[in-house]
Picture (cartoon, rainbow, N blue to C red):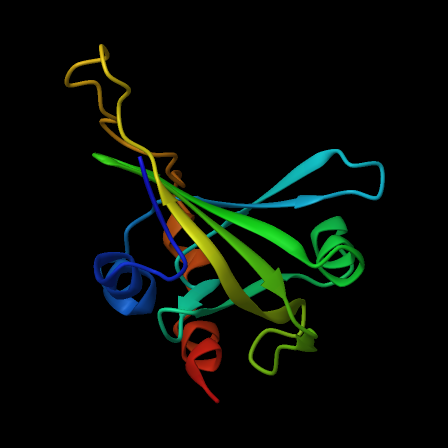
Length: 156
């Protein structure tokens, strides 16, 4: 298990466009906490998250959702990346959100990376590894990817 204060280069590349360009259907959990302290998960697609640098991410969440309210009230968030051979968590602090221009039903939040933790098997667990992560599936799975939203997340 290793921990750093910024995104490793492979994670920056994955969230900076590689994941979206490949149209990977990986579902990316964004965890926030309700006022009662109960964790809540929103499942993001690669068009709803983007790395701007090794210290900055930006996410798009549903306007009016509990996730939006939690990012405003509590500001803390954790992004989980779980896929073949990869188990990483990114702890972050949300900045002020703004409405999306390309998708009015979304609110865009900048996230400052606080720490990144890469999990690895414990001693005695041998070669245990994830073989895949959660995926979006179904006949309209491709419809959740928005090039316009992804481009907007990369705008200054």
